[in-house]
Image (cartoon, rainbow, N blue to C red; front, side, top):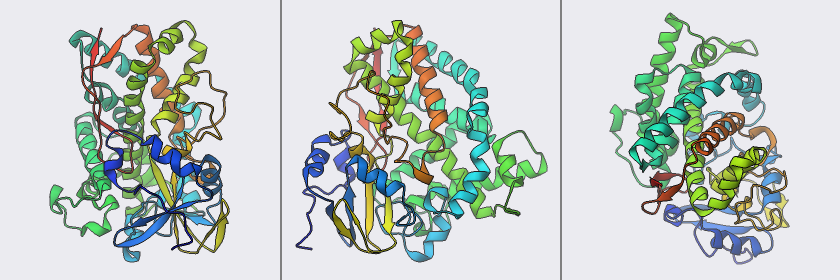
Length: 413
């Protein structure tokens, strides 16, 4: 290990992200030539991929950097648990491609535009309530309910169950803090090592998905769950495990990531009041504002890959079987890619960031939906000429996986 450049800070420590992205830590790592090795206590460490171009390189070559081998978490998943825990993001082509083809039609622009009036109606009503109250917890009142309601609309989850979906996704994220959770929560009877993030909430989500799927078999509806249980890919229907894992992934990804971006939007409004005041008179800049929100929020901090063969990345030899961790929270602030990367700049040239992944087969399926939700929320904020301030500092989610905000108390002036 002596010939390896080591990270001076353990990037896997959830406490490192308790105040948001540790920009200075990542900036120092980016200055080092090649990749840096991050040791882990009790198991093999990983290569920290922190520069934009290197993250894109890994993302676009799944044949060399696998999602299926070891899955996408930093921590080692036992071989006998891989299949049970696998959702679409834990697969490589052709298995990944097979499942993605199944759900892609629901996320094409023509179908997503059907949800724009619903997003606007819900954002408008929630903002009006917040204005009447003079402020409150932005996460609870705005950032949580909007994305979960839309993904639940798409899936066919009843209105009365949506707070339960938020609760379960919150509990999933708690598993990324690398601290033991109550193994019996939600009536769990499965050993935690077989559950994603080792969280009993995965067991509860699987049970919920199974029950909803059975209801849709008996009474089909015009929703995504009905389509998933009836669809055939290459002449075969989804197995029960594939369906429940798919449902869990869509609930988690459709809720948690956009929630993080919506929360970060408020922080940018507070820090950059002149920029947002200018947006009202220059609506052509709103799309740029939305892209900047996602870039600076970097809702998913990292994804891991595993080398399938000996290779070289950024001049660093990587051995077969070694973990390679792409830090989107670093690549989105790479000075070689972005001028003044810490600035929120709605006039930034239209060049892709990696807030939705680094490209390739795993580009975020819900990117189009997230853009719609963020754009409409921002438009509705500007329509109300809302002046926002923070009543107290943000409280971040204790996690090394999502750049989430737990609580964000705002005042409306």
